[in-house]
Each structure stands twice: as structure tokens, then as C-alpha cells.
Length: 357
Image (cartoon, rainbow, N blue to C red; front, side, top):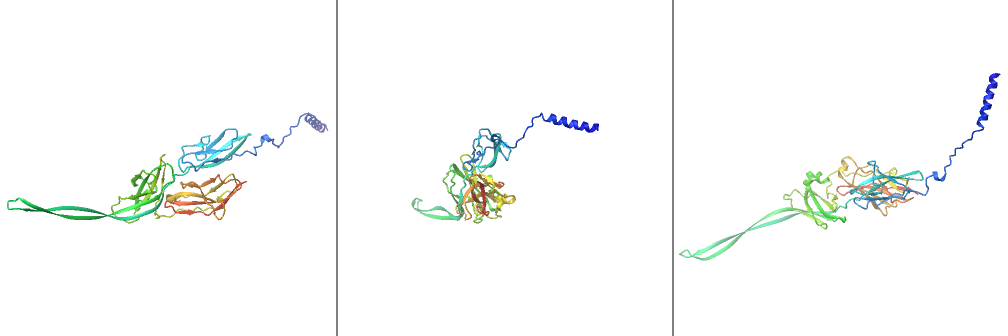
């Protein structure tokens, strides 16, 4: 009985003591200042593809500092967005983040520099030229009297000639549209050493042209006659800044052509805000030896009525492209084209993608 009375007393005291405390209410409703700004977006843009060695990135001002990280190196880059010191054909993914109203906004933009515009070889002429060398020899006949005095003289001329065959190979190309071209290097290799032309080496160099308006070159240095396609050539564009770009290797096809890229619906995004991403399995292994470039083609419809080249990618290991010019809530059709060192193209099928409205 005493124990029961003690328990009742303790419960009563606890109730009395709790009645004097203030109860703190916890609300799950956020105030406007706690929410991200619904009207703010980074809206990343750049002038990618316009210059050979620099890119300018722009974004909407947040009123706070902005962080730019190169995702391939995980190191910060110029925080102003003016990226310099790049080289032609560079492709980089840059992560950009900033804080506004204590909320972190983060997005990634792919930037790229354009390639040096190469020459396009359009003709190769092989011809045999006959070089004739003439030799002249004068023979004199003299008449003398009985005393040995010369009375008269006559002369005859003997002529001989020698004809030598020479073998000229003439390349003709359309000029590069690069404004800063200062000349061209000419490279040549025999069919047995053709791999030296894939990435031209010093021993393949045969001549240099200093006139940027030159559109042809005749190789006069071959003395033997091994056949029309025993030698192959590349023309290398050189710019004022020392940047270079090789032409294709005209008429060389003795290899397995790389590509095509296999695109499916899952390779082209439909869930990105402000851009469309195209991803693919890159060209690797021996196929990359004969790779020249990727071309990203975009069309507004299935009929491919107005196809544009959005980017030229000179490195086979690149495996994606972000189209930041897609707009919001729009649908585009994309193809990835593989171009080999002979200039032949293998396009993928066109796959649609769209950006979020």
C-alpha cells in the first residue's frame, strides 16, 4: 500500500514540474530567405570554338565569389573566366560554383578551342617528263699550200643528245582559310614507311613554302620510277603563333577505316537544363592510329534539312560533347562523324535529344 502511494506521489510531482516549462515548436516550413532564388541560374556560356588558344566563360552574377575547377586536373583555373594559354583543339570540362542566399549553385560547361584550318588536297598528278641534254662538237678542216701556209678552213658540227626520264608528282590543294598562315611544310614518305606520315617526322620533311597563297607543289626529287602511288604526301599549315595542322594523306587507304560511332537514345540527353549532352565510346587501339577527327553534326529535324557542324574534335580519346547553344525546351538531332586520315567519313545515325524548358 505504501509503495502504491509513493508511485502516485512521484507521477503528480512530475506533472506539476512539466507544467511550468515552455514548449519549443519546431517548424519544417522554410522562410523565403532560406530557399534558393527561383529566378537565379548560372546560365553558363562561352565563346568556345572561336579562337585558337583562349576561351571566355560567362555566367550570371551572383554577387559572390565564383569557383572554377578544371575537372580533368581537379585544379582551379582563372576565376575571371578568361582562360588563356590553351592550344588549338583543346577540350576541357570546367565546373563552376557560387553561393547566393547561402545556397550553392553548381554546373559544368565544356569549353573548347578551334582547330587550325588545314588545306584540303584535291588533286594528285603523276607525270613522266623527258629531259633532253644536247652536246655540240665542232670539227675543223684546213687547206695548206706547199710551203705549209694555211689557205682555207672549213668546219662541221657534230651534235649528240641524251634523253632522261624524270618523274614529277604534283599536289594541288585548296588554301587554308586560316588568317594567320605564314607557310606550309611538305612531307613525303614511301609506301613502305607510310606510318612516318601519320605524325610526320623530321626525315619525312622535303620542303617549305613561304607564300601562304601557294596552292600546289611539284616534287622534282624522285629519280627512279617506282609507280604512281609509291609515295604519299602531307601538307602542314603553319600559323604566326607556330600552331600547325596536317592535311589528310591523299589517296592512302591501305588500312581498316575506323568507326562508325554507335549512338543510341541513351547517348543523347533529354534531362539537362540549358544544354544537351552527347556521349559515345571513343575510338581506341589501332583504329585511333588512322583517326583524323570527330565532327559533331546537328540537325533540327529527322529529315536533316539544315545540318550544321557544331564542333571539330581532333583527339580520339574525347568521348562527349555538350551543346550549350541548344536553347531551352528545344529538340535537336545529333550525329558523331568519324573522319580518317584519308578524309573518308563514317557518320553515326542521328539521335534526338532535348533540353529542359
